[in-house]
Each structure stands twice: as C-alpha cells, then as structure tokens.
Image (cartoon, rainbow, N blue to C red; front, side):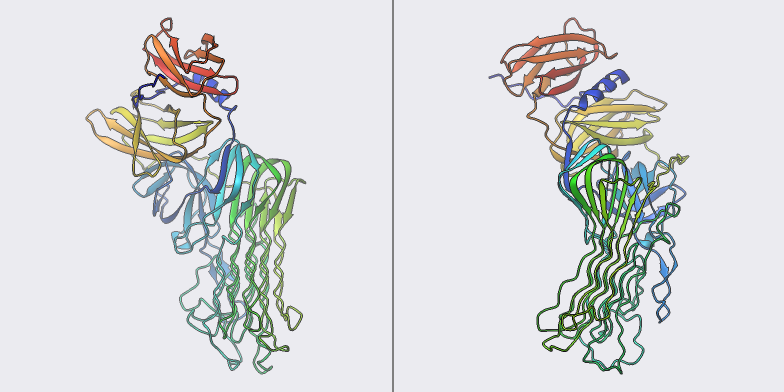
Length: 640
C-alpha cells in the first residue's frame, strides 16, 4: 500500500482571485450544519474604557481576536435612594447600567482591545462591564442544551449567551439560562428574637442577625447595607427579624413582597418582610432607551433555626441574530429560580423567588413552533415548625422577564408570568406573601451596532492589520485577514493550536507589498477537530517578527472525508490525490484563476492513489474539486 510522504507546511492558498473565491463559496453550502451545545461564548471583564482611542482594557484577551464580533454590556451601575424608609432601593439614576451593543474588534495590543466603529453608548467599568465573544455561523444545529457561564459578580462576567447565524438556527435541544442571572440573597446570620424594636431598618450589615441578605440587582450594595428588608433596585429585600420572608427579585415585572413574621411574636412586634424588587419595565425597557438586564435575585429569609433558604437566582440574557429559527417545539428558557420548602417540623422565614431573564431575538422568520419561557421563580414555602398553629414567613414570587423580538410570530409561544408567592402550610395561605408581577413581550427590536468608522485609529501594527478571523466551511477552515499598508513586510506566518500554548506552523504567506486595502485568504483543509486557535504573525524584511492576532474556531467532522491529502503543492507536471477510501468512481474538475473549467475527468478505479497530469496547464493558481457523488472536496494548488 502506498504511503504518501508527510506534506511540508506550505500554504495551500496564497491569494485567490475573486472568481475562484466566489465559486468555492457556492459549493461549500453542500456541507452539513455546524452542531453546537454547552457554552460557546468567551467572557472578559472590562477594567477601563478609553474613549479617545475607542478601546477598552480587559483582564484577558484569550478567545478574542481582530475581526471578531463582540458584545459589550454593563451589568450594574444604577444609584438608589438609601433613606431608611419604604423608598429604600428606588432608582434615582439608571446611569449606564443596562447599556449594550455589538462591536467589531479592530486590533489588540496587550490587554487593550480597539474597536473598528465608534461605540454608540457609554460604559462605566465600576458598574461591571464585560465583553462577550459572538460566534458566527451560517446554518447551525443545536444538538445539546445550549447555555452560558453563570453570572459571577466577583469576576464581573457571565450570565449571557449570544450568537449570530446568517442562515437557519435548527433546535434539536433547548437553550437554557435559567438561574444564571443575578444571585439570590443568603439567609440571615442565625439568631434573633421577637423583641426587635418597633421600626425595623431597611438595611443591615451582612454580619447582623436582624436582616437576611438582599437579592443582587443592578446596583452595587454599599458596605454595611447588604442585608435588610429594603429592595436593592431589582433585587428583592431580605426578611427581617423575626422569621420574615424575603422579597422576590424583579426584571420587567416587580418582585412580590415576602411574608409576615413568626406568629409566635405577638402584635406588639410588627412584621418586616422583604420588599419585592423594583420593576424595570416599561421605564427602562423600550426601543428608545434600549437597555437590557439580568433577572434580579430574591431576598433571603430570616432564620433562628438554621433552616431558612437563600433567595432564588434570576434568569440570564439570551441574544440571537439569525435569518430564521426552526424551533422544532423546543424552548428558550430563562426562568427565575424557585425556592424550596422548609424542612419538616421546623420553621423559619424563607427566600423570595428569582426574576425571569431576558430573551432578545432579532429574527424575521420562524419555521416551526418555538417556546420561550422567562417566568419568575416561586417564593419559598414554610410550615409550622412542629406547632400546628404556628406560621412563619414565606417568600415573595419573582417578577416576570422580557421577551423582545424584531417581529412577533404566532408559531412562538411566550410565558413571561410572575412567580407564585410562597405558602404557609399551617395557615393554608400565603400569609401575606405576594406573587411576582408579569413581564412583557416587546417588538421592534434592533440590537445597537455602530456603522461609523472610528478615525484615526490609535492602534499601530507593522502592517496596519484591520481584521483577522476564521470561518468554517464544512470540514475546512478559511482564514481571512485584511491589511492597509505593508511596505516593510516580508511574509506572514500562520500557526494553529488547541490550547494557545503549543503552536504548530501551517503556512508561510508571502507579502504582496500592498500600500492600500488588501485581503489575504488561506484555507486549512485539514483543521484540528473541536476548539482550535489560529495565530497570525508577520516578519519584516530585517527579520523582526510580530504577533498580530489570534482567532478561535470550532471545527466538526463532516462525512467520512473523501480525500486524505493532495500533494505536492506547488506542483509541476503531476499532482497526487490520496483518497481516504476505495471508491468505484471519482470525478475531478480543475478551474483556473478566472473560474473557467480547464479539466474534467472521470476515474473508474478502486485505487486510493490517483496521479493527475498537469503538464498541459499553464503556471498559476488552480482550484480542484474531487467528488465521489456523495461528497465534494476542494483544494487549491499552485502549478509551477
């Protein structure tokens, strides 16, 4: 059996004429969809915003590259009324909280990421701003539950799923970001009695047993005010001493108030349940303001028996831009977390439910039923603590979330209801706890994205790199980079890796010495499977070497693969095709740089090594297609 020699790492494609590129793209549509599941986004915290250079400083650039599209979003930053009264937690200024937009990365220098177009909105890093990578697909198939990294206030990242598809999103599994939003407040420090004064405060330190922790919302709680019944904007208030329930978190709809104190405390001692989170809609949700938020967390319950539960976490944010969605009766779910029952024969206050999340669909066509659920979570239940006539404070229900679509469609069912209040099993009632308010369906969505070029750009690279990105076409990966000036450039180097630590060189691409806009392309015909990275670097005439950008891609097998390798490249009078398997018939076409067919040959043989005569071809770049009538393999080669 003939064993082909290992191919040298020489570029298969230097610069394809437009006719050949166009022809190749037409035929890539015959390959299967990309299949996705799990977490597909990368996240990094923004630590500084430089408006003068239209750039941000981030904690890490891993998974981000020039030419890539990203979401920039501010998670918090509102200011609130902190007077010790019922207005505690009301929003006095929304500031930049909820601002978001899509941007394209122009370039990266160290931890500085520069954007191609001028940002539309303002961002305040102290309010927890993050960048989220946006995977790009043509047709995409969701084959396992698609989700996101949970929101983490410590890292300032997560809670968001976003992707774009130029074609159809086919759902053979659900998208689920339930409970991945703002976190619920913890129960109080264990302790407390009925003797607690006549005017319980709206804020306490986290170390106090007088109030459970407030649910997380769009404002950062001041030190020493983390607990207590007062709401934290859309975060529910914590239940106060003694055994009061926590308030539900809010999003579009308000969170419900928690329930009353222990019935073992006589009427001399008033109830102080957690107040439900503040509704953000319709004040802050509109096509004019265009802000989005995570579902708020529910407040924790007050405890003295170590039996209370935390408030429920809110739902996350889902953003999809696509031509069409084939729902297949699957669901996009971003519910608030429901709080469980208390332990049998024990009593304490319980937590409030988390608010439903936010789903944005910039999609014009739906081809089969799709379900969307952003319901608020239920508040926690209570029992009698071993006393048949004793009542303790259940939690309030979480508010409903937001479903925001470019256009409504009857094939899409929507659930944005508020969560149910908790229940006292001994009182056989909510005992004062309130359900969350419903959210809303909004239409006319237009996700913010600037089209105004930022000029002059601050970033300077040896070749004025504008973009570098990777696109998958069937079983192949195309690398595309655009430059504006490369007077001193000798050549580019392309490398690939699975971990960004160990790099394998795959190509040298000579410079064309362009002084104007120029696009290079290279096709990796045998990419690594799964997640992989491509690194582009440049070498000057004097030998100076500079890394320019890194691009990330996901590659999946398509079919069994008709061709193992084609060699040599460049070729002279003969080129070898090593087939992956024996096949009775193989059809080979060759096209010149103008897209004109110059060879059309049918091979009826079970040989796995074919030798193609090129002696009649003129020197130049050619595109070859190899087909067994079930699959087509494309290869670009140079005839010397």
